[in-house]
Image (cartoon, rainbow, N blue to C red; front, side):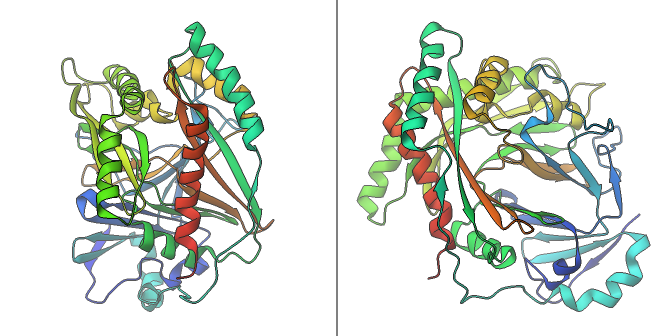
Length: 408
């Protein structure tokens, strides 16, 4: 049983305490006025454990790479037989709920937190640091069009209806300071499902606007996001872009296909008759983009648990296509390299019965040892799409991240 303290001093989103920890995960859940930060590792586990009501037995944080569940639905394993997913029980959890901040302390780490308590209030931020690098496209526009043409032939033959094709940019950026970079990215993007993850020398800085799944005991919602428009500083133009997105037949068809796949995925582990589309193709506006989002809810069936839901719906339909299995096979052929963390998920389950998993997009992956940084973006291809516009969508999404990092 953890000791929970209400903290009476401001807690830094990225506190100095993190410098000494080899693993941590920050997750924002903006629609709940909530954020959580799991610090350190008390125990590594294969998967979270739950009681009959869907409550996690302890705070459990996870990192799920895109390849965790294969195109055939089987779970990928390491050479030693262990899962390629990462789940761990942290030493401490900081939880922001509105204006109140809680510290959940594992009993084995009470003394250590007492010694390091001040580090929770010291922020790792250099506001004057310049965060810019030269980025190179691993797939240029010509090669992008070549692969899109091949994928469009599969769509025209009816092999698939939609496929999410992604491209990568990379930079040699040994001077990158990930702690400052994430704080700036979070502040300027206000991404509702942002994440900051460290595993040794590897960092993920994600300004994600997309939720994968959210849990409240035995209730679950999914929120597939397909359809994007850039924001404009001119109010009239911004309103026009928002309305254009809401009415765009191609964008709506992408979203509806992702909804259909998620409905199917959830129906396999949901109580009969409980899978419901709460909202179809709603427009949500963020500082740099408008997004088209739908919401599907379900009640988890008796005999199933939260992790059965995650396995059934992973990877998320918005990052694969439809039908999912064939789309994933074609993605592997077109992209040629594993996606890894990108279009996977970062999230947590809590003892109060809640949990939240995001979609790792708008994300910079950084390896401090090699100095290499990676940024992937993608878009959905359908029979109605214009390949040139899809390329521009990839560019807009990348720019939304890189512009947020620039010095003001």
